[in-house]
Image 1 (spheres, rainbow, N blue to C red):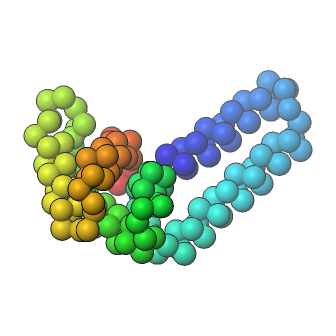
Image 2: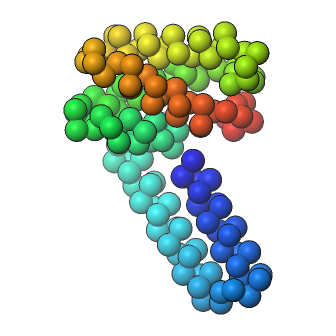
Length: 145
């Protein structure tokens, strides 16, 4: 999602340039800013030892649960969750006629959450965040894989 927003930012900037709304120097400034942000994301991936996909899930979960759980615990949990989600993905899994596939994904995530030490009161909200992120990130699977 972040890389998509970087691309959209760049495309919007180039469109402004083509419409003569901004100068070439301003385009370069935007490109430098995008590169800086991408470098920061790469550094975070390296520090947390997560892939880009895992980092997207981590960010979605840590936003609401980062203060409640240890960073290492969340990283380990996210690695297991992403593996469980990807193991259950099938073509068109987010389409209404494929609710069985979505249910299998949710079931695998629930199993990972139950095995972990997630607090009972956090279980449903955490599951919801994870499923929303899975749909956002893997909506067009396998085209994005």
